[in-house]
Length: 265
Image (cartoon, rainbow, N blue to C red; front, side, top):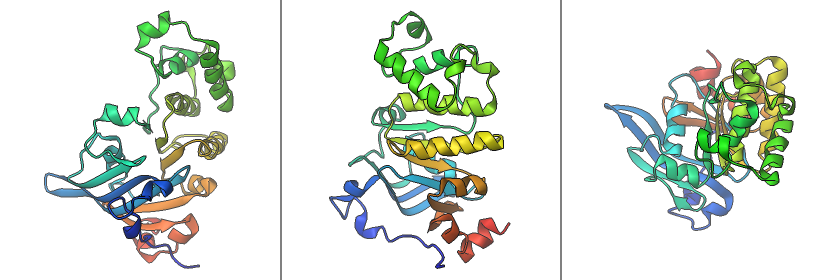
């Protein structure tokens, strides 16, 4: 098997190809992020296709979180450009980027412990203006059906009246992902979804992510190689802020640089 290397994106980047967005939903071009003289990110080109599930792996400090920060507008890149859905979004604010269809789930699930599963979901419905508005709002049948459909997919339909504080870690992950889906993002960034899960929860989480790519594009940050293998998707390896290799898990595992920098440790 040939070891994975970096694809030649040069002729497909937005400033060279007007049709780039027919293939790619997201494209990062010549991105650097420098903090106090330290270059945390140094990416030449990365493209993520429509309805692709891309897994990003790499050692701690490889730049995975910084890359997500740049995509979501939390961090402004020092140089380079971010393109999404046919337009450049490099200088847009975090709120603007959320509105155009990029959602993010952090490693620690963001849920409201004192609210029920259903109330957490209601807060994420388009047009929600906070807890007080949610408590006084009257949701239509379409919205209620949509919430229940998502909860059934993650096996939380029987827990709609359970306060989030009583959920297992895996259930909190599923609630956070389901809440994110309600905002209808085109791209989901999911940070270490398998961390702290039981074997059965990990398997269900993998099935959920694979199902979601039918309607969304996903970037999954992960360390668990067994989980990465379950996802059976294209892998990008980051190390010291740069993209080292890209391909299937089996292909990147044979790359000498990847073995030395990450997998061989």
